[in-house]
Length: 124
Image 1: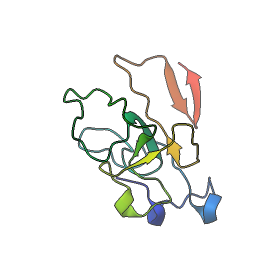
Image 2: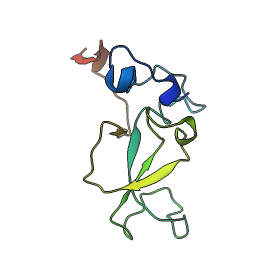
Image 3: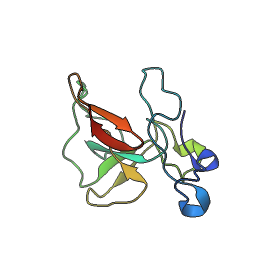
């Protein structure tokens, strides 16, 4: 269910000896029906990084304050399989960028009107 170093060969994106990021949804979805929660790219989180979860919000809201670092989760295509899991988290400066970082867009509602075709967004 995850892209990691040993299985990420991609002839379309031949960086780093033929390995690279992959189109979302090309691996099996998790038990919630969500694709690519592990591997492919580290995902930036709104939460600030803390060494443990003591004092974390119990309602699932973002954990602001206490650190200048933000949480990144899930591992990336060039990490080993042990790093490519949802529970894996690291910290990073919020202004850092890399080909191995990404983010997940979350919205509340129904998304209509656009389709993804050959990696290009087109109107319906």
